[in-house]
Image: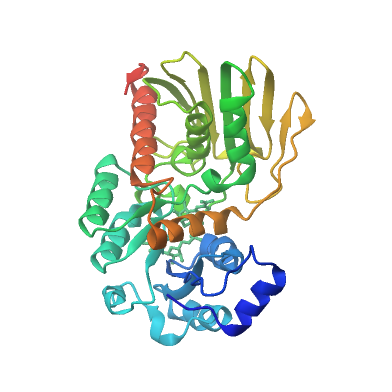
Length: 357
Ligand code: NAD
């Protein structure tokens, strides 16, 4: 534990005795290694460490040395803490690193999560957790065997508007009748997202998972059946069996709330929204799960919410669990549940039958 410096104590005293007390130890920031320096890592995650109160970036893991040459100095990560995928087992000797954040295509998640756990680290892994239920279970087992924590990067569970929506669903909307959620955009060519071997599937795995996860966190219920349909536009060679475009599905839950989701990879304009119809009002979010500019209305009137940096909030949550103890809000089991439902959605679309969960 770092002890308070004299300057920090004085600054704290100037701010008032409630802020800092003399002799109270300052909690250390938990060290993160970012693995995979692609778009999401560079544009959302790495810049968010500046807004973290409990997390700091201390190492990089990449297959591209030139990215580390550029990003290392930019983020103050020194060369001794740069690793390749082949040398990442040496993370075990770097005590500054507590957590490895895996931000690579989904089919690579399992291998990297297992390697990070083997190096004795806690792990955060991006969504979708992995292509198969077996992969997800293996990841959960590997991290548990190492005695470490696993978080899936479901940032919306840490995003202020989404959390307010959940609170309103539980406390102020009365009995909920129906929830719908739609997520889709127009996927460009050349991306790994259009390669099912890397992505694990099509729109459902990548963007439809936001609709699915929102239906689950807004209702607070787990589906007992799913019924789904997939439509691939004729003549569009981006899509074929195993690489789906539009998915529409309904789910039944014990309370009887009607749950309906959609997902798409050929939608222009895209959709990013959910709607909750309750006895005492209709809650609508659009954009619902973007990176910024979230908007929530109740019966058409703006719900005032103080926005937050959801990426920083997600990382700080895991850091506090690691440092202070506590349960991870979005553990591996949460990622596995979505993957199990997505496979039931695929099965229902393939067979034309309702699938029990
Ligand atoms: P990207 O293509 O921009 O970056 C992927 C990175 O993985 C690259 O640096 C690439 O070099 C590396 N990589 C490692 N092994 C690879 C392999 N075998 N094949 C291809 N690339 C490999 O992708 P991205 O948009 O940064 O997405 C990365 C992960 O983050 C995905 O799991 C994605 O679903 C997730 N993601 C999450 C959010 C979110 O809002 N939570 C947003 C975007 C992406």
